[in-house]
Image (cartoon, rainbow, N blue to C red; front, side):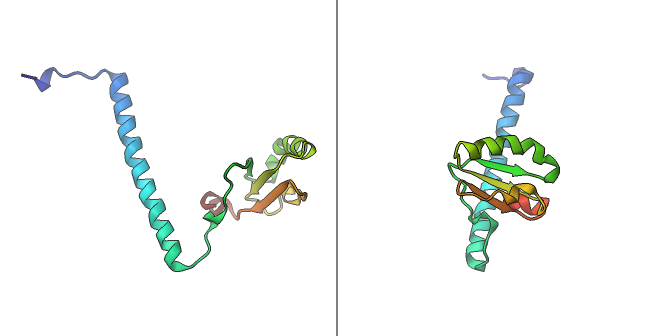
Length: 118
């Protein structure tokens, strides 16, 4: 017979099993949350920030104007190469919002908290 007192799981395997279990539970809960908000927005009739579809698009998110120096060389090169991309920012004074050409979509997402929802 199997004696449970003699069962042993090494720390690596135990950590893996616990992480997988917690990950599965959280995935399930976030899926339920997503379904709940989808149903809620369907019945409330309000427009949702989640209506944007950036599937198969190159997307950049900038938290604020102070990071523009990081994005500018990359975005400038993409524009030179006629590469389309989406630029999102949580700063309404961001210089990146002035990128206006046929290859660029720019969006102000609102404050940082609203950007997380977006």
